[in-house]
Amino acid sequence: MDKNWSDEMLMERYRDDDLASFKELYQRHSRGSYQFIFWLSPRKDWVDEIAQDTWARLHGARKRYQAQSAFRTYLYQIARNRLIDLLRQHQDLLASDMGKADDDDGSAFEHLADLAQNESSPEDDLEEKQRAAELHAAIRSLPGEQREALVLQQFNGMSLEEIAMMTVVSAETVKSRLRYAMRKLRQQIRGVTAQEAEA
Image (cartoon, rainbow, N blue to C red; front, side, top):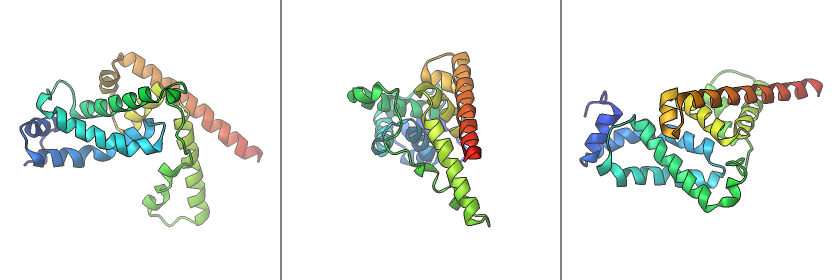
């Protein structure tokens, strides 16, 4: 198998039961799809379930796959639909617009200092973890549609057109959601910085 094959080519081969193609797709997209689910799920205990269900549903739907959009868009749409299904089953969480995570302690960013592998001081590491936790909380507090657009663009590298196709809105609507999300993040981060200066 050629590592330079497009995702769509690999998915077409997987449709014909080529397991090596599935493994390559999984290696390419498991981390990104997991991050996408992590950021949108209101509950941490759902993340693993949705991630596993996404790949299982991809397997089940492989024979019906048609390369009408990017594979990544197709995969993330499966994950998004599964999350929506869970939210419908738990109406109490829908009321809070996909709410906040049940444990917003910033643990998603705990590993950032370790990954940096630099010679920073413990004080610098603590400061970096605090900034990451503040950013995490700010992103989690965004309305669901804005958070989704931001995560897809900033963390998963999707274009406006890909996001629009996946969320079934216009590219202008996506652009508007991103603009509002960035404005709210700036306001929240400025607010945190101002509070720190007063302390």
